[in-house]
Image (cartoon, rainbow, N blue to C red):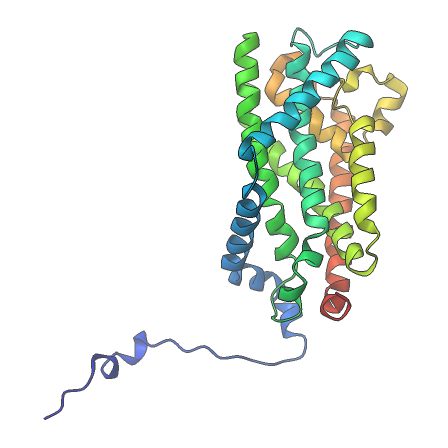
Length: 289
């Protein structure tokens, strides 16, 4: 007598079935649910971008240390020694500069990595369905890896100068999230525009290069005249940088609350514009790209 195979006696309640439903507008209604459903694709793309970033490089991860260190040295000489701009309280000028460089490099790296992500993944975009917002979001993970390396370098720098952080450091994860949200809005906007207008890939480096000088990276925002400081916060990175310095330098750096709230509003506005424009143009990516 033949015995049934184990696969034939599995309880019906343990058997899983998947049904593909083709319905007009269904993908639109379940968009955010689909992002969670494709979380493994997000992880795969993020890991691929991180591995490619440091694969076949001469100095590898050390490149993430050399760039911010040299930038810190140049800004310290130019703004601290030549221009003789003040630091935040008694904080050493290099520590103050590096505390402002952390969020700026996170912001600029996410913007640069995400803006060209759809174009470089053109084959994937044209073959299968998935929420396209996963691609630029996964590209931003590379910036988080660089941020972790830079943060470790800041710790070494603070130990070198004998400057210890205060209890404000417990709020730093919130400002890291704020920096990511501040960059995600413009990144999604530029990513969608770059699909249709490829010359945007030349605009992004200009924005990054210009932004580092109009943002308080190499100097403290307290040097801005009082009558202009509120409007200076229309640059959303200003509030993010001030928040980082408030966390890292503690009582040495005061948080300008009106300007910080204005920066929060600008971050929310750009995030809404970026997501809205990306979602509106997403359907045409496969045809244009």
